[in-house]
Length: 82
Image (cartoon, rainbow, N blue to C red; front, top):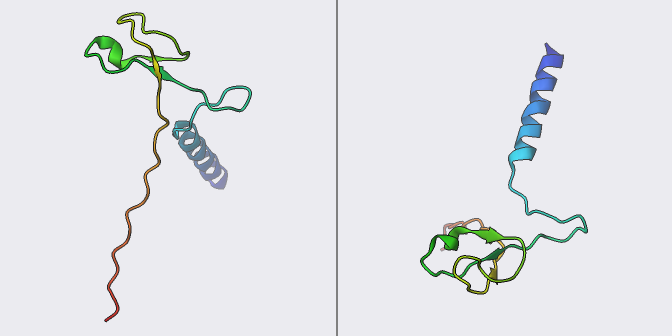
């Protein structure tokens, strides 16, 4: 029974690690850059490219996608000492 619980716990841990979002890293250890088409109200606005250049659909220059911002936990509101 203990062995089964250990295996289940290990599988749960592997699942959590595998599904956690992490930035992609190239083989050289650098973060992979993504490029997007600037908003032009065409379907290409949602496409993501791996290299800089021009959008094949609208011809606009691709811009580097900003890395996702980490959210800070909200500040705790404490009682003021009076």
